Image 1 (cartoon, one colour):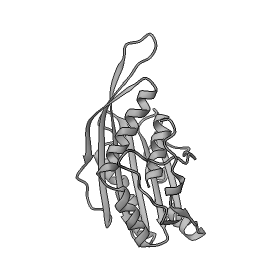
Image 2 (image 1 turned 60 degrees about the vertical axis):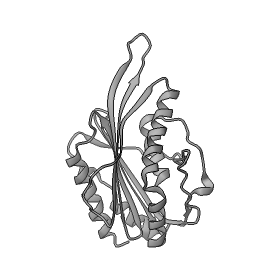
Image 3 (image 1 turned 90 degrees about the vertical axis):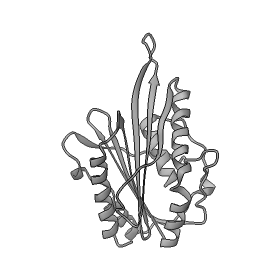
Image 4 (image 1 turned 120 degrees about the vertical axis):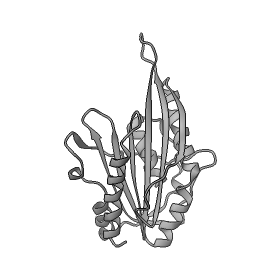
Length: 225
């Protein structure tokens, strides 16, 4: 899951390539059955109201690693994977839906335990700051951490990063815009899924985020992983 979160930030923010750590990635032994189950879990265009569209996913292989956060999944095995990304016609917000299917429940739980923890949010915030700084911008983190969220799956966690993003354009005064990221992680059996939303202001309304997460959790359960 940590690699997928890195891809999200790369797609949206054009963050410079993160440290590659291919030796810590899970082994990939995809099966036709588990790839189909993975595709059945992610969000679909029909889940969105008018004004949203499917956007291309990134093929970048960067991992999300930071000082104090470098989860090692090299002893784990993935057998299925899928991602579906959606953007509003106005550009923002953007929602990313993704799922990893592991060879066993033990592997999925091990991945969850290593990735879904407070250091993950700190690493996401770090990547935001570094990415904007390299492009002449500035990110000020105003709030970060876990948020209350319904237990929609046996493994459920939700996080929020609230920021103020300052960008400068040549010949113009700096502009500061509030920007919020929400991440909902869901795990059931051999599957770990996520819904990540990015938008200006307070971001995607929590009611919408709960609805997307509820859909994802239901499909994850129906996949019988």
